[in-house]
Image (cartoon, rainbow, N blue to C red; front, side, top):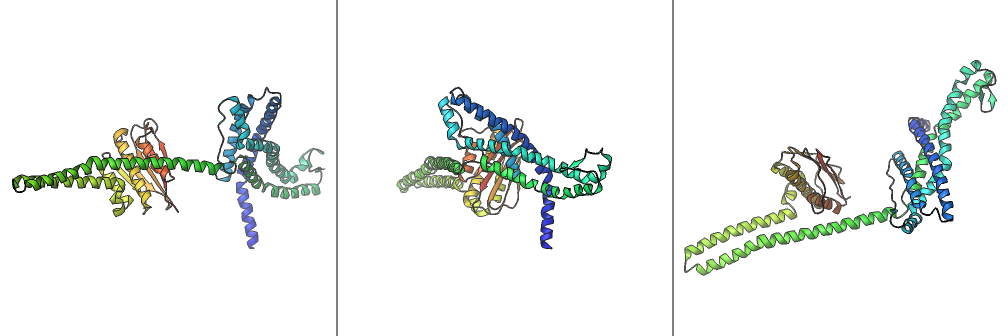
Length: 418
């Protein structure tokens, strides 16, 4: 009984997926015809290359087939529910370099392989996707219409339907046709898998791109770290260090004047005390900029609530229960939101701000939205560039949307590790 229920459930799922599968295969038939023309075009260009006149056209021919290939890559990705990465080497430079790239780039060879495979198979899959349902419908209605059709005009799989036994046989044939129709989602899945296998990046390309991205973000993180250390050193040298040196000098003078002019010495001591208090405040500011104590004392949500309360522009914090995250993530999130609120205050002209935090334990999502003038642009060395560096240093990402007239929406995702 369990086996029967499983078969019925599988059949029901395939019936529900049938319209999408038929549509996928029919569109695949159209792209199959286009792929056939593309293959013929490439063969013609290749033939002319043998006599030397087709070589300049070869890079352009490969460029012309990419829109078709990219369309099929997107279709297959939607069908499979997972992205298929597009990884091409740029066809640029002189003629020799462009021709070399065409032959050296494995993505081009895989494109040609898909064009050939799809041209040979896609049209047949589309034909069956259309013919099988129509044929099944015809077999089902044959017993009702065979008597109304002129003799000799109604045939079914090679035999003429001119009697009730043959009409019943035609009706029975509809059931194996229905079984074949239920396999169309499987065929569509296979076609998508073929596209993924041939149009996906070659082995090692994704890893190489990932290594390159990590190398770039590591370099950016090191630059940001160096800049942060220089800022801390500058703050200490110009602020707290100078004040502490002044305290030492004032206490030394007070010690010298203690017996000669006790009243002046007392004034210097009070002045040294005020200077030491200011130095302590500056030290606290430096420490707060390195890692705000409020994060360890009260958590990220409370720290951001305090930021929102101090914002010159009315700011609403809309956060789900984010819980505690790794210290590096909380610090990055705090500075991201601080910088975003500062930028909005300086440049947006907004009247309202909102900060949203949330996400699963392995990912912290942050969204800062303002109703200002929009047209925010990320510039080198600017606050938005700093936000991107902080996010990418943790293998996160930043997305900025700021059309003219607003609103400006800044989205940041910070992975929280395993």
